[in-house]
Length: 118
Image (cartoon, one colour):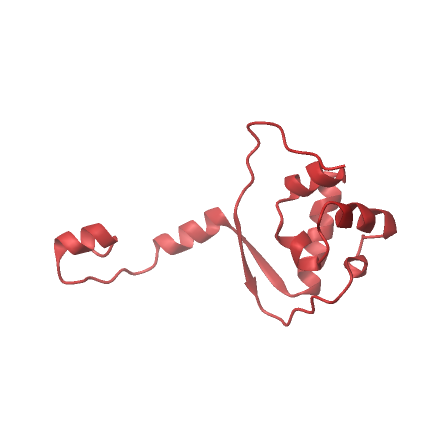
């Protein structure tokens, strides 16, 4: 049974950086904290790979599976550590990108349109 989130529920974007080889053939039960019951719920909701579990918003998984929020957070953290994936929120990516240097096209109007240096 799939659950849909109530109206007004927002899911947050996340960015991930991959620093290791990912073996997508590994079964989701190899994640610390995922037994046969939780694995069955995850598969029924469409989360069949480790990657699909670690990149999905926790609240989305919670609504689709009925698994507790804190349990999902622990499973996601265990999955990320298995695959050597660093987690970065969208807000952190935004703040980091604000500090990037911008180049100029040589035209103030074109820079304004493209978001280059003023």
